[in-house]
Length: 403
Picture 1 (cartoon, rainbow, N blue to C red):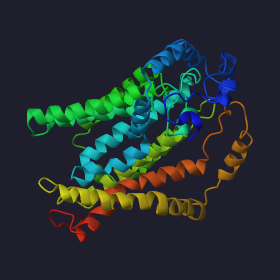
Picture 2 (cartoon, helix red, strand yellow):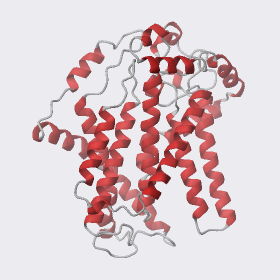
Picture 3 (tube, one colour):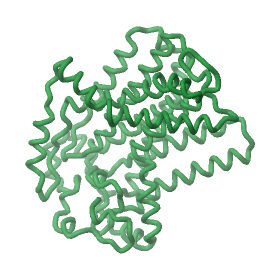
Picture 4 (cartoon, rainbow, N blue to C red):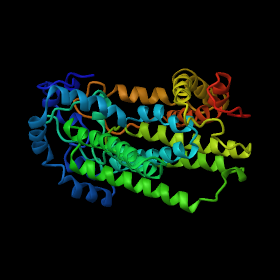
């Protein structure tokens, strides 16, 4: 973590930032973008940029007025609650409590919030609020290397919060319990959204556009649930093939930014999780298994705690120990895909000491496929591999051939 990212009051942006403001993407003049964008794309960017040109000064005054040591620590730490790693590790909770649809809905909403916000970031190429004058407070330095609008944290928080509030409203619990849970969701939402401004990471345009992305994604999911209410993917042999094709298609057809921006990696991860969810659902339906039998934890919260500990460890082992060597060995030695990672590494090395952000380099093609596959493996681990292990460890309510 850089000096500027230490969440303490009074820490100012470092000298490098002062001398090299173009190190952050989106801050170059119009000529830098005009020849690399379509006419519509460039004109849209210029129209929106007038909302970001003057934001840094008044946001800096607001930040300075409200900044304290403990608020900086709080907002820097809670920003992790909007990261893709946090969601990947926490999303299995509904499934291990017996709700397949709960995890599926959240995955779709979060995945397309990340994809759409990332697409628009790379399409518009709008800058974050400048630092200086703002002090960026972050525990994840790579996020400072992304474009500004829309805020993916806000998109995720909006989609997830609206879904949770909708779910709470349908729970068979008392009104006071619903209000208490809803209050916690609102606190979570405001913490993430206000924290983005407080930490100097986003301006109002970023927040508003991010919220709109989240709303669009949850409305899209609700609409698809209604439209495909009777659709059984297990009846069609081609469904997982189409799912994989669609996921890789929207990744390889993702808009190319002008400057290097790392947010695309999060899109690859979440689109991969969507593919894994659809493969898992297809397998369960083909086997005639209704997920959730023996997984309900009503009156037995210790079972859920046990599943979270054991299942979380299994997910971590897949993602960080087994997944990468297994997937890349298969892609390189079985499918014979070209390993183009060294080319990208060499290209990035050219800009290691550059005073400006590098031009778009992009991900290695094998990394897009590999990352997609690794994250696509998480839902089968959660939904297919974990239940038999839970059964062996007596973490189920009832015995079942799968769960």
